Each structure stands twice: as structure tokens, then as C-alpha cells.
Length: 215
Image (cartoon, rainbow, N blue to C red; front, side, top):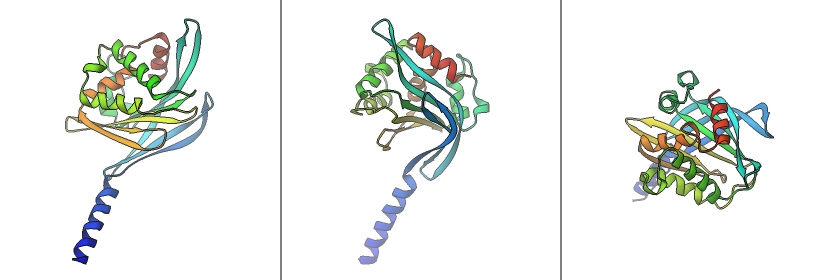
């Protein structure tokens, strides 16, 4: 009985170890908007390891109160094979899969609530004819994960990492507390999500960020 119990515990621990996700950013000597940029990111999920290379980066700004322009976050873009990215508006989203896994790493430039980030994502989805209230369960889960973060403190990181396999996609959401939430489903939910940055821009400042990420 004891041997059986020990074997069961070992099996559970082994499976937990194999299935654990880790995301490790490797900093470079470059700084942008007071953010220490990363030269690469290592992703480990379900025993598989991927190295993502830096593609580009930019600053998300937004106009508020008609006149003031504020800084929201620094976005860094990574891909396993950047050479397979089609850096134009018509093909970029479709090419993410062939260049993947990919990651958007967001370092917030000011204190924000999860609800504020959620609302900006919903607005950007709407610009791409995607109704958050009628979206897929997987995309709804992503938006809920964002909204559930009570506060994003200045300098904290929030990342979205996408992988693809056999017609499905998996998104790893790394929150400011370093916890990782995993969401899997049909590929479309990831394409819809990345339309926030690579689809039709919701405003001129998001258009500026898109141009920077497509360099």
C-alpha cells in the first residue's frame, strides 16, 4: 500500500512538473522609454521548450480628454522565426502561426486597472468587427483574465504568448504576479486577439504602435 501511495505521489509530481509553464525573458543592453528591453524569451510548456527572438518594439499611447496624450505601455514583439513574418497589414496575422510561437510583452507605463486594459482591448476588437459580448468562449476567457487583474503597477509586465498545433491554438497569459494562465481552443480566438495590435487600429496612436511593430 505504501509503495503504491509513493508511486502515485511521484506520478502526480512528475506530471505536474512536465505540464508546468515557464516564461523567461533575457534582457538586453537596450532601453526604450525607461524599459529594459529583452533580446529573447524562453517558453517552456508541457515539456516543450521554445526560444523566441526579438522582432520589434513600440510605445502604446492614447489621447484622453481630447487633447492630452498619455503613455500606456511598451510593447515588445517576439517570434521563434522572425524571417517567416509577413510584415504588412494584409498578411501579418496569418503569418504569426508560421513564425510562431509568438509573444507580445507589455510593460505598463503608468498605474492602470485591469478594467481599463480590458476596455481598451474591447474597443480595439470592436474596430475589427469583433463583438466581445458575442465572441468565442476562449477570447472571452482572455478578456476576463485581463479584467480580473485588480491593478497593473508602473513597470509591471503582462505577456501574451501564442502557440499553434493541429488546428488549435494555445495562449499563455503571464500576469504581473508572474502566474500563468493557459487557454486553448480553435485558432480563430488567437487571430482575433492579435487583431488588437495587427488588425485595423482603433485610433491613430494604436496605428503608430502597429507601424513600429511591423518594422
